[in-house]
Image 1: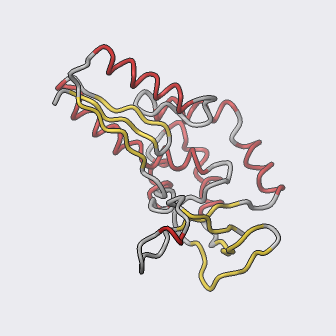
Image 2 (image 1 turned 90 degrees about the vertical axis):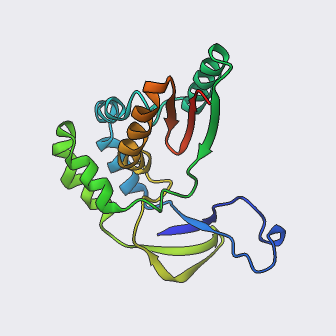
Amino acid sequence: MCRLVPANNVDPDDLPAGVIPDCSPDNFGSAERRLIAQAYFDEGLQQVYNNIVGPVQNGVGVQNGISITAFGFQAVLGSAPGFGAIQSNISNEYNGIECKGVLMAIQEEDTLDDTLAFSHAPLEPNAYVGMGNVTCLLNVSFMSKEGVQRGVVESGWFFAIEVDKAFKRLHQRLVPHGGGVMAIIDDNYVMGPP
């Protein structure tokens, strides 16, 4: 079971007439499922993922990771004040990535070969979707079939591995010109000479 949460953090009454607020599944699943995933994504596996997505991505599950990334970005701009900079957030793209893409990215990494079967399991099932809050939860007429659901243990790791190639390609294009990319999950900073 997952629930829908606003993706744009705007009260629907504040939106222009006719604009429907976007939403994203936020998974809260069963406690048993969460315990199994936490045990599976132990410190060793977390380090494997962080080694793969680094140095462009700051990693997943890094305490104060967004602050570390932002301070690093500020340090770069401080040392190169002429650089142009873009701060971006690929918000709600947890649902935009495809399960197939996540599994292909995992399969391409030799160090994750033995995790493919386990990784397939949480990506395979369709999830029932509910709207509302804990005391008033209503089922909707559709199911969540794609993307990585927020709130589950593996979501950050799966998202990071799937977007890793795109971040690294962008980084490689900017490095020859003195620029680069820093990212943590969906928050990213692009910088370089104008």
